Image (cartoon, rainbow, N blue to C red; front, side, top):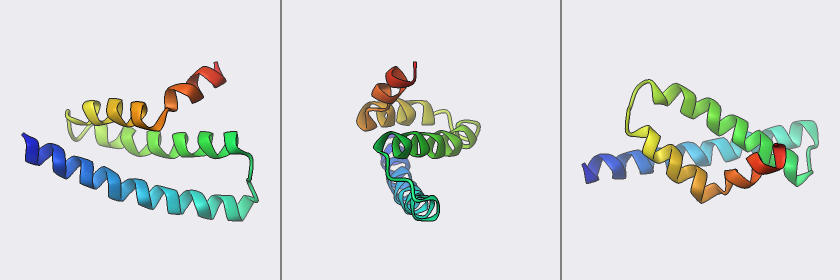
Length: 81
C-alpha cells in the first residue's frame, strides 16, 4: 500500500511539473500576469487532469484531498464564491 502511494505521489509530482511548464507557456502566450488568473488557470489544469485519473484509480481521491490542502486551493474556491 505504501509503495502504491509513493508511486502515485511521485507521478503526481511529475505531472505537476509538466503542468507548471504548460502554465508558463500560457502565461507567455497570453501575457497573463495577475496572480488570481494564474491560480485559476492552475486549478483548471489540475482539475482537468485529475478528472481523467479518478476513473482509473480509487486512491486518487486521497491524493486529490492532499493536493487541495497542500496547494491552498480552498482559498481560491472561497474567493470565487
